[in-house]
Length: 85
Figure 1 (cartoon, rainbow, N blue to C red):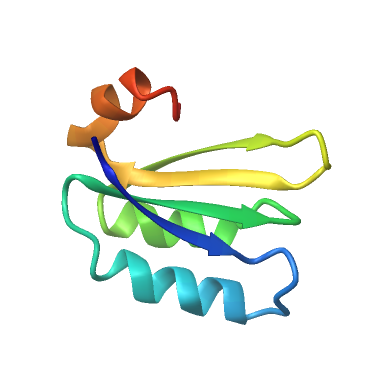
Figure 2 (cartoon, one colour):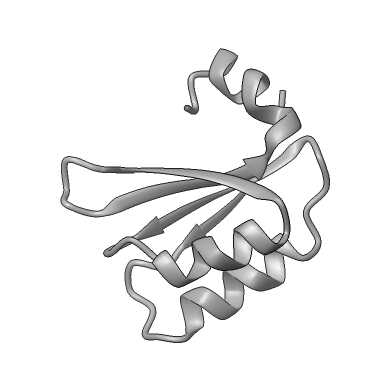
């Protein structure tokens, strides 16, 4: 089972969501992932993820928010088995 960090950024003003996400991502280890809830797709954050060799996926929720999962490539199968991706 992967360890989850959760960042609910739906009520945060820029650049707070980006800054908080970067803080978490810089300390993440394989076996950990970030679940971020946001009111928009944070495309600039995806560039940062690519620089750290992190993978990501996102989906729109029924409430018209977005759920973003950021993880290490080696954890892809574990996250799929757990129904997170």
